[in-house]
Image 1 (tube, one colour):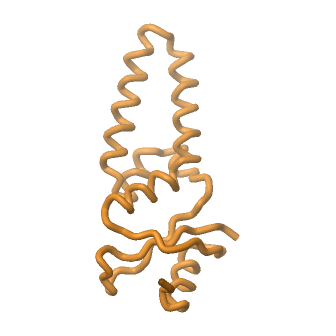
Image 2 (tube, one colour):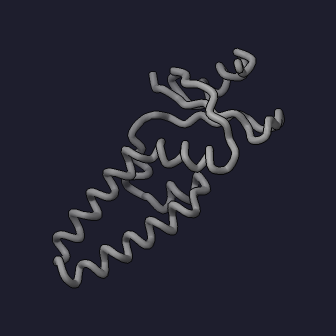
Length: 121
């Protein structure tokens, strides 16, 4: 079972389904960060990631390509662990409201449980 942070739709709109953000390591964010950012609409984070990679490439002229490789691996691992926090911060920034944590085997199940509970307040 995974812990999911449940977010209520923006501005109390009943036609939007709640969002369940898993509190777990994200392999997609670790292996393919740009795909993760685009999939979840995290455009500012994508720009920050691209700037970080460009900075690493530039730093490679001074610190060597081996160091740049390991710094990128470290960045990718950090993104895998921080993916849920990044998504939660982006949802809050765009007006979604955190409500509670639920445990469920999948995100769809967490949304279904949330809806069956009547979205407790």
